[in-house]
Image 1 (cartoon, rainbow, N blue to C red):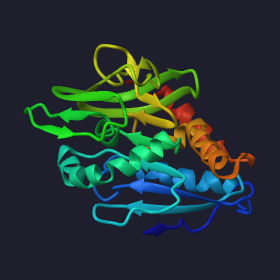
Image 2: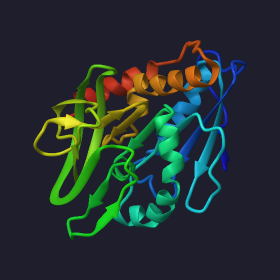
Image 3: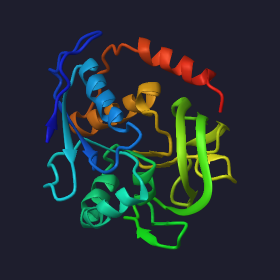
Length: 254
């Protein structure tokens, strides 16, 4: 289902450079911490960069869209993961092909876990992942919750909010998104947050993530445009509110 947001603001919203299609995975079941906001940020920033956004939903049982340029997915309760697991397994080959071909993706919390090898709940049940990311997650009785700052080499300081009891460890096939300066991140022991593989950004950070971290949004857009059109011509995004949001988030206590 195509989604449009009425009205735009800021610098140029012309879309003459071409269409970029953003697919949000399972927003019906994996969107409990406002992760749909990540797709909306991409939609607006694509406009600001002079391209035309097409924002699509993919839910359980839907036909998967063609010509996907960016994929985003959010978090959900264990029950939400159980709802989508069979459908996700059915789409595993297509998603792996897109990932290996360099399609930019942002996966948050629950879908970060399910893009890995498996999520073992604290009661011992195992929800299989689709194995795109070399990570595994184990549920615990410890809840990792609060504001987070992450130092990254690619995107500068990344800010967000974590709320998860699953603890994720990275294998040798991925690298961390960054090092935690405040908060916990992937788990309570190694000081890393998130994972990076090809053009995939995986993270536990909600909030939504992209409104406070436009550098990550622009990475996804630039990568998509370069793959589709051979080049990326940046526009003039209006970052005033992103700067204010970052300033406010950085001052929050843990």
